[in-house]
Image 1 (cartoon, rainbow, N blue to C red):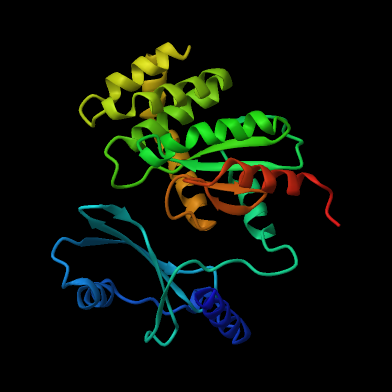
Image 2 (image 1 turned 90 degrees about the horizontal axis):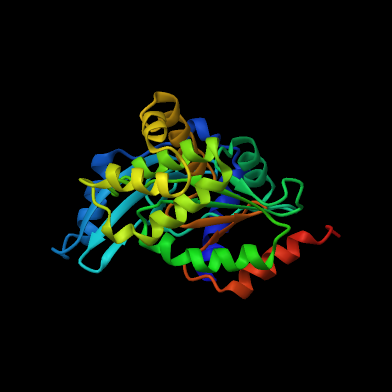
Length: 284
């Protein structure tokens, strides 16, 4: 709670100062690397890679995305750097206002390009940013399927968000995009089959495996493979990635329920159902 209040105070301070994102001072990669070396260099098992340095959603505050790796796994923390370059916070900047999720909800509605299921006119839209190579995404799918079965009136969209450290995720994303545009029935079967065989797919055999899943799902693999290689397909995948980053996606799986960002991994079904049912009710 103390960290949350600190973040909110900083956000409000810089907002009141009317500092625009265009003028946000950004630290250099050398400065960030020097900071990380001084903070974590004592741990010889830890490595890191700077993913991106950009203005955050809070005016005047820089957002530094870092991929941290240890023998226990990987994390993607975000450092929020104040305008004076002297202070950093680790965590999330959350939206504020009478309808705090409206900006993300509106931006998502304008940018979504993935396959969808459920009634388009639903009062609740659920958007999942996912990576077919992500083990956490695979593990989260049973809970997501239970949620959609329990809330059949919700509108669901799958958005590609292939992570840069995954060797075949971008290929999988291109296949999802192509199959989704040709057959809404086949794409869900393809996604499920890919998750089920995730552990057997490597960078070397990815095309062979994905082609087999495409055929088994009812799509024509030769057409899908040709589509996946086209520049416009790659552009659509990149647009989905950019959309996710714009609304604060830092890892997968990430769910948005009417613009509210929810970490899907480990989220209890009852909690997700409560959020959907709350948004399904008319606003008071």
